[in-house]
Image (cartoon, rainbow, N blue to C red; front, side, top):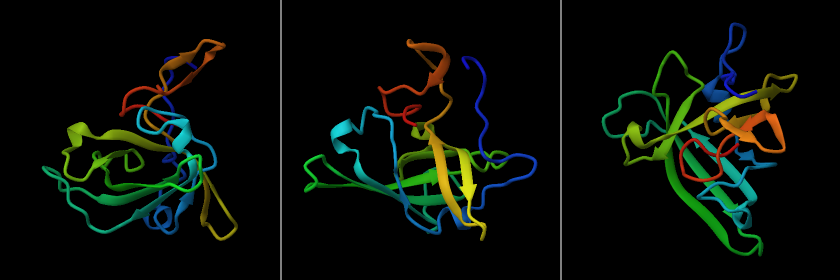
Amino acid sequence: TPGNPIDTVNNGTFTLDLEEYTRATWYVQKQQVNAYQPATELYCVTATYNLENGKVPLFGGPVISVYNRATKENMNDQINGGVLCARIADASEPDKFSVAPCFLPNIFAGPYWPIYLETNANGEYTIVVVSGGQPDVVLSENPTICTTKERGINNSGL
């Protein structure tokens, strides 16, 4: 609801395991349109995360390499987003990533927050829901529901 901060996956009984989160490629099932990803480019979207000890200017914390891929609606044209860097900017919130091209300092990075996660019987992550930051756009058709914005680069997408 409007004004209530969302919870991320870390809580008193669960902590995000980066080794497990980066174990396999994620296949996007549903994605919100945003300024840099129109609906015509949201086909067969994958995200692969690797712990590669990447470097970001003016930052000494953990960095995860991010490789995004998609196909345009004609199903022929591949889109490779180039390498991005997910940074854990605040060690007290290790499940709130900030993501940007690796050459940019954290001030230009946008939020990427796992807010829901499921595991299988072996403890492997099978489903994750990610928000591009705090949802603060109230839906006109239902004023009790908020989402992230569709315009702009940071604080957008779900």
